[in-house]
Length: 116
Image 1: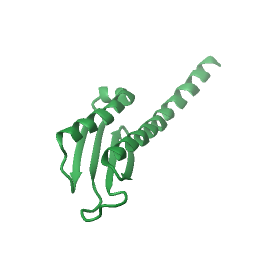
Image 2: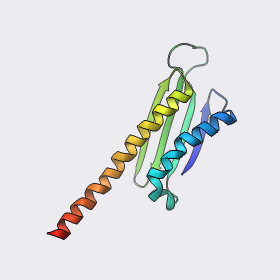
Image 3: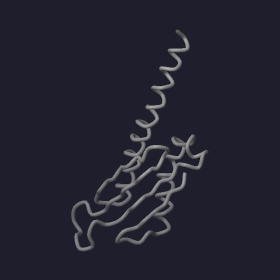
C-alpha cells in the first residue's frame, strides 16, 4: 500500500515519517487483495490547525484510503500528533472491516444458494 503524506503548517521529521509508515503501513495486511492489484493508496494529511494556539486539540490527522469503488475516510484532532495518528489508524481499520463485510455477505449468500 502506497502512503502519500502531506504536511500542513508543520515539518515532517524523519522519525515522524517512520512512525507514520510503521503505524499506517500495518493496515496494508487488511487490504492485501487490493494492494496486489496496485489499487490501494492512502493519502494522509497531518498538521496543526493554527500556529498561534498552544492549548487544546491543535494537531490534526486526516486519511483517505482509496479502494475500488470506495474511498474510506477518517480524521482526528488531538493534543499530540502521534496520538491522533494512533486513533486515526483505529478508525481506518474499522472502515476497512465494514468495507470487507460487504463482500463477505455476498459470499455467504452465494454459498447458501449453492447448497440448496
